[in-house]
Image 1 (cartoon, rainbow, N blue to C red):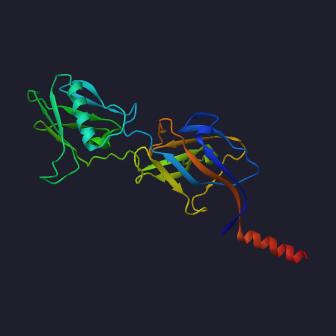
Image 2 (image 1 turned 120 degrees about the horizontal axis):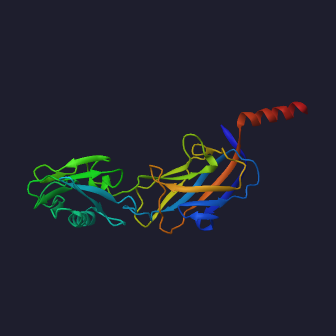
Image 3 (image 1 turned 45 degrees about the vertical axis):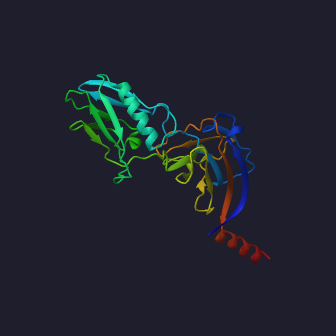
Length: 265
């Protein structure tokens, strides 16, 4: 068991940054003392990043050796709107003018599997392939870094499609940099709506504290990432959080000091 012997609280708003962006910024902390631990007491992160992000919005279509990049415009999508855009993008990208359709189960007459069915026609029996990289695979219902071939002019998603971009977002800082990670706090984003805010309130001060490993600076970097450590583009919206730095002393150490004082008397 331990007690806080000294503390300092900072109310951080990325709009007040020294430099950088709202999602990756440098901030000056006027630290008045020597502290051992850091903890985020509460935070508000805008869910303003897009489901489909710039530079992470393509996959490759292969038609009998003729390849083309299928591009989905950046932004947020649901299952139906993504289906419509995907069909448009496939037909626009087709190097041999094949005709593609993308469908979802009609839940009014059959079970909803949560998967897409891709069909191709005007292909002369040639079975195209989707070459999937490391992103957008969840929205397609496919696996990362995998090639999928149509069979009998059809391809069905192997997984249920997913339109929640991040289950968890991370607030990172070089204030607590170590060999494992820079994560100051992870925040679950599942209950937050697009264009709303992801909220965090610390339920246990000691359990969520991180040791300060870089205590001698006044300038620190903070950045918000996805589960893969990729910085999130918050599209101009600011992050705010309450950061507490503190020194803690164990109860046993305090008791020893009290006993020592009593003995000296």
